[in-house]
Length: 78
Image (tube, rainbow, N blue to C red):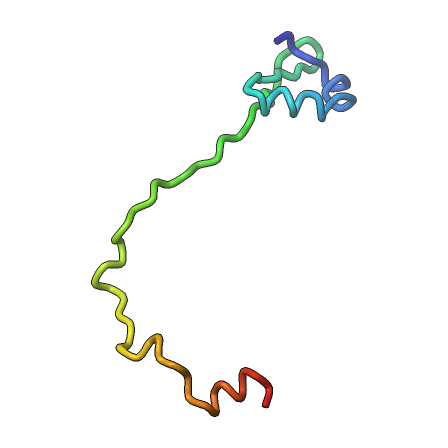
């Protein structure tokens, strides 16, 4: 792509952002000299690692038991 002037970039910014998102770098020039490259940001994804907390987290044996009546009453607003 040919370099665009700062004026063109300001006037048609959304068009150039769209082109950058599609993978086309947009070069912006001032006074005929290339000064800036508009390029898309690729999100950095970390790979999922299963079992990282194995042995580090413990749940009580009664974790999924019913709550006491007085606690449930508090949640229910009684």
